[in-house]
Image (tube, rainbow, N blue to C red):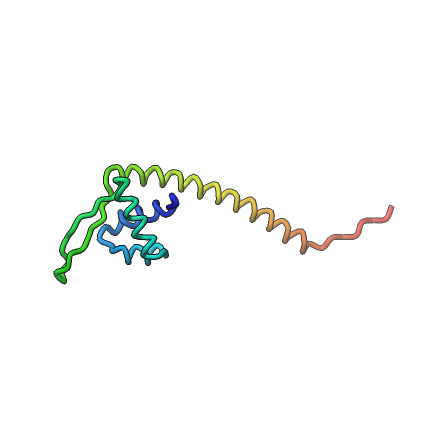
Length: 116
């Protein structure tokens, strides 16, 4: 599993601890199998714990709670994620400036040079 996916799963579970794996898969745009694999990996790492609770329709459900280690891991992953996204943003700004200059240069009317 990629670190970006771990970040997205931890972020979603922190905000929606009562989300089902099906809800999580839909929110992240990944398969239910991938979601299950990722959630199990986070549980095995000790970053997420599972608690049973009863829903109003009398069925058992689960709450996915970030452990203190999970909160620390999310903070580290978030810092790396932000650093990577800032670098991507800076690279995009350079590329946009180059493309903008190319477009302006291609459309500007150039005067013929004076013969010497």
